Image 1 (cartoon, rainbow, N blue to C red):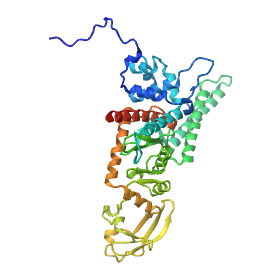
Image 2 (image 1 turned 90 degrees about the vertical axis):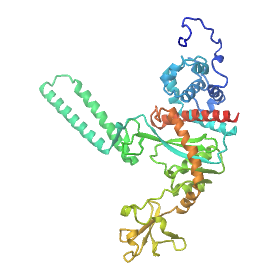
Image 3 (image 1 turned 135 degrees about the horizontal axis):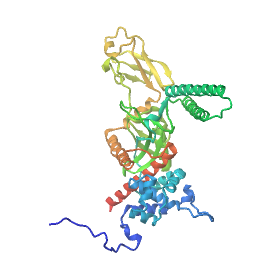
Image 4 (image 1 turned 90 degrees about the horizontal axis):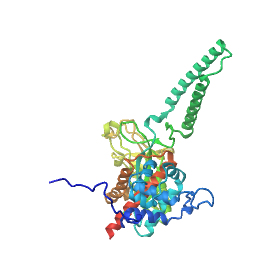
Length: 463
């Protein structure tokens, strides 16, 4: 018995004569082609949407957009890899009708049409809404960290900048002293490489001064050299790498991403209202219900949502009393009495309002005297017990009350899956482009690819 053998490489084969026959009728690449053909490229702001009457003919931006969406759909994001696929992948040949743009043309298209690509992403979301793929009755918010291009070694703080600036000062002084000594020994000698070296050091010193000034102006602790929009993000004991916080709003019914944003926020605590409001506005809704995890817990954000006809469902992230080894009374055992604006402790004593702490957006309440209280050892190690209450406590309580176990289950089922799929498409969740302009373009392409994949699956199940 022999092995299964392939055809002879020298055998003449009758391949399909038409490019159309290379792609199956139900292939996802046909969805990409149909969607991009229907876009108004000029209205979205794509460059060269209308070809010039003179000069060398450019590539149609529709073809380059198709290529990028197909690439992100198939986990091919590099412009050089896309160039290679145009010459060997039958789907790419069909999509571009055997055009083979070079990698520079492909990369320039993504760089120069960032806002237009983001607009194309929104256009696909609206298309899905208009075709009835989702109703946005409930939207789940979530955030995830995506790695920046920059290495963790590029993160510098004030101390690193000061130390390197001191080294540069010493180097410049050494070179200048060497120049003075050389001039004294041979004043007619032409200057050599030393002035050029001084120029390099001075240029670097000026760059360090600019970075230090930016740290002061923006109140930052550290900055990423070469990618200043990135921030150190992450959890754990290891050094936090430069990253971006990608926010998504996912329709709980269909799993489609209805809105997204790439931000520099290290946490999600200030993102509830901005993302929910942007989602509501982009879909032109009169009201919206959103659900998110405890990372979005904020009384300020909750009240802002309610003021804009947004109903937030988020569990309150309360601070824990860790004094006394965590064995002391938690604030939950203290009862708030609205009539007197005070708290009642387990021993029946009142904690009166003392002051408003504007910076922390809370009110401080304190007991008058705890020295003779029989429960003091179970309550506090200080002279008297203190409790804080958020200025937006009522909104926070309402938001927390809506975060039922069933609601949080819906959030988990809707919000976690898209990030897993997108990070797989993006080689574990790392950008290829730098700063917010480039990363927002990349994320828009990834969201288009994910939503297309999801919508194809929804249609297949419905058939």
